[in-house]
Length: 142
Length: 381
Image (cartoon, rainbow over all chains, first blue to last red; front, side):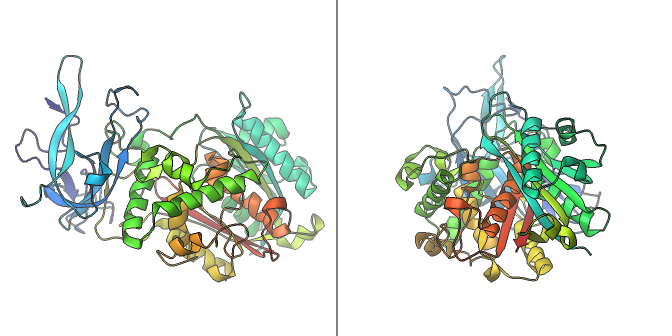
């Protein structure tokens, strides 16, 4: 297994966290970490691990196969829709991520979700490429 | 500062035109605008051209006449045409020129737009994992808006059906067949809650306008339309915008809200004075949200207004009278000048079967697109 990109989430980990950025000057938090602050322009942004749990601020489903640069490896025949959400992590930042649930009937704005890492595609040599995603937290568990 | 008048508008139809190039469509649009103004290309002192697909819209000079004029090329996403319009107007406002042309042209492949996300300041992996889709953003924005403000899928279907209905009346439109609300709701979901027929399509086309100083406008036309405001705003920290992997919790309004407020201030009028409106309807939800972002109603009022038919051609707030993006598609560089073309016809009383009643005096056009850029133009007789 290999992450789809370096330095996006902590890996390997049983409790993976997204790697964001925080501006020491103004406190703005971004995802992923970027070279300068989106609010004040400071170039001293620090790496900052984001909370694992959050609430679903909004969501949609991706029901058609995206064009390149999408690299999921599916064909129109094998493509399965996936959910995408904007998740508010604590009071720090809202981040976009895949959802493990693709049925809108099972998704609800405001529901609690948790970061997980799921297979995204399989390379020719059999390596599973992993991507971050948010999974609904089972009721009663949280 | 010199006021600016629109003395000519021209359009190459929007749709699919086989091998015809964007440059040739742009040339047709300019010729039509020049004929409308009753002037020759040799009278034009400068121009701005906008396009996504064409690197150098100024190449259109090879079809119109190589007169050597300053012809500058601009790109601002879906707000490109508004940038061409604003910069042309500014050239006249500053007193540097008397007569100029703004032209937009494009020729897109079918299907959702794509590009390199890095060029939008998004992470390099943003497209690889399937997030780099404008349709996904618009779906997420309207889903939250429906949740917060009680907008129903039926309202989205009404908006789309109106777009197709108005397109039937527009000989230049791409989609000219009526589609019922039921068909729209039952068509394939592309990005929940938006269905296939709730989205516009990228296509091909061109549009052009001829501008001059207001003081000389009556030399060319007895029906000048004045450009009262042209504004463009980029996103602020805290806005939830297209092609972004994150948004701040500390929420701010969309760039359209700021462009709109600035435009009303520049024009010295308010939304209650506007008689005919063109909004960026990339999807039916965007039209609904943009009604509020541009000050035409409060959040949530759209549900009732649209059910009552207020935004129909015969309603009290006609929106997207030429079918908008939903019926015309979106050749990015031309789209905003298509809006201006329609407003000018409406304000002159030349919109034929689409003409709104009551001799409209004030027209309003809004654009919104990647990576969070909005523009507003206000016109009046």
